[in-house]
Amino acid sequence: MPQPTYDPDKSATDVRQANPRKMNLRVLVTSLIGVVVLFAIIYVIFSMTQTAPA
Image (tube, rainbow, N blue to C red; front, side):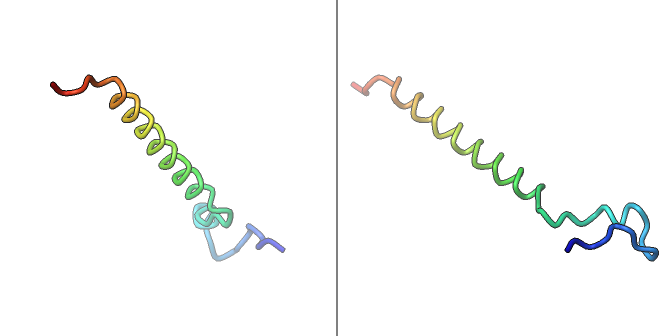
């Protein structure tokens, strides 16, 4: 059962600080993986278009 959001000893800002679902971490990890994959694809395309050295 989730914790109630009302706590008489905490302000509204204090109550909002915790995120039990860790959505921020999920977005950060997903974005980081997406950027790494994008750079890998760009690198592969770049290396495939290079001419062989003479």
